[in-house]
Length: 140
Image 1 (cartoon, helix red, strand yellow):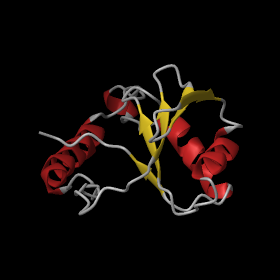
Image 2: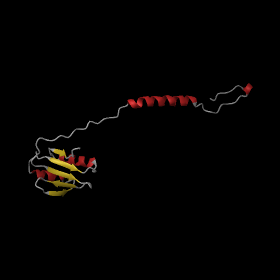
Image 3: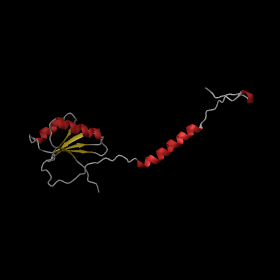
Image 4: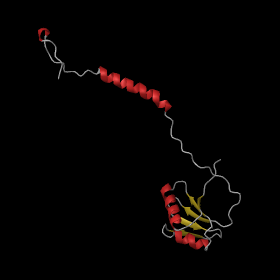
């Protein structure tokens, strides 16, 4: 209901919205945000570090994921073959020659989507491959 001014002195309705309380509330909120913003700590992710193994394995099967997400299987003997994502598990089992402890290393290009690497790891895990690792480049 609009406020009224007495008729004897010229009764009329006030049509304007009083902005002062709105501005006061906004200034209080601004001050609260300015005070609390420096206190908020950014979330930190604790990533695992990469160390060097004492002894390198004698035989390693390497799966290479290229920039175009094509797959390549490389063996210690120097044999290399191109694969599809469906054939990865069978090709690795064949390359292991019944030795389930033979490590499999996934080497992916830096620009490959993380999802592609995880899919290959998941495929190998579902196939029962025990030792799967990621190839990394040590920082300088």
